[in-house]
Amino acid sequence: MAKIFRSILFIAFAGISHPAWGDGTWVDCSRTNSYYQYFSTTTIQIGKDAVVGDLLGGWITSSDPTAWTCAQRSSSQTISPQLAVQGYPPYPIWNTTSTEGQAYSVYNSTVKSGLGYIARWRYTVKGQTSTWYPLTVAAGIYQTPAELFPVTYDSGRSFNIGVDVQIRFVKTANTLTAGTTPVFDPMYTRHYQFYNGASSTGGGTYMIAEFLAGGLVINTTGGTCTTPNVDVTLPPAARSDFSGPGYTTSRTDFKLNFTQCPAGLASISYSFMPTTTIKNNSQGVFAPDSTSTASGVALQMLTDQDIPVTFNTDYLLTSYDSGTANTNYSVPLRAGLYQTENTVSSGNVSGSVTFTLKYK
Image 1 (cartoon, rainbow, N blue to C red):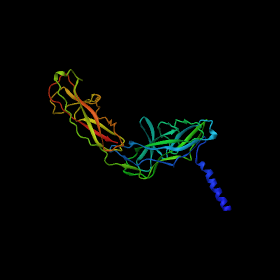
Image 2: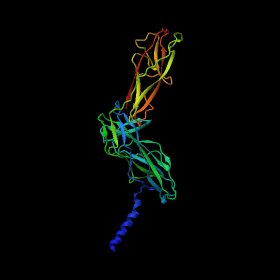
Image 3: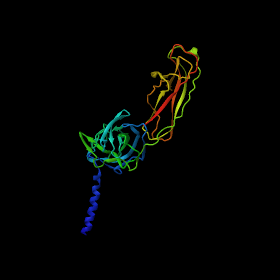
Image 4: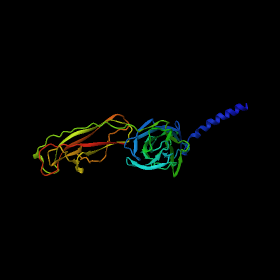
């Protein structure tokens, strides 16, 4: 009998101890599922022009809309505590960088030489979603965001706190090579409560945003677009129409086509350089080639909005989507004639411009 009695006591004790898995002074929160929220398997393409400090690929997201299940304690039903989610980096800071108007700490992943990352997170409390917060603190420190969302007692009914974590990689050394990574946990999060000058943290119910072993693939081969040449024929212009230096005419639309572009790059940019002398860089004007017979005129290159192109300047291919492979893009442009001298003589005008793509 004594044995049976002891067994019954053990089972009863296990039952009443289960709520201890929750965390929080005023709001009791426990993990809804497990410690982990996973990133999908991802391939990062290292562009051939990427240098140390460059961002690699786009943002990679791990989302858990029901990370914690919470209920306000009955002992706190008369107050309105505020909730948020803190972020924590387990890796040391390598450097800093800025993107999208915000400053980030770059963390050295240590799981692969030359691979660092930046991180940001946002959270949702009872339907209230925060902005994205860049992770900036040193390893081992929990960062508290600015937005705290108040909650009120609802007869003990439960609600969820959700969290989204985003990672973007950075080239930190030229030793970065192709391959996969082992298990990699770039960021931890935990719920945070605040009331009347005091705080409470979910240290026992933290979450881990994780790449599984082999879930991050680094690719250093390929990664270029096909770029066919473009011939542009300008319509004839009457010599009598030219009225003085700066006069423009014969503008003609054309497109640069970039086809079969790869996925996984941080960015693609392009630049222009004429094969002849630049006459006026602020106006996108360059000299005709040696086969031209007309005088007093040059060629001009502009965007489709009539903004002169600046030569030897990188332009971002803003329509590039790092998440889609073998995609085609086009850049609308214009070319025309530009009067450079007081007197213009008849003849033909021809010239050429080289365009260069950079992959990062």
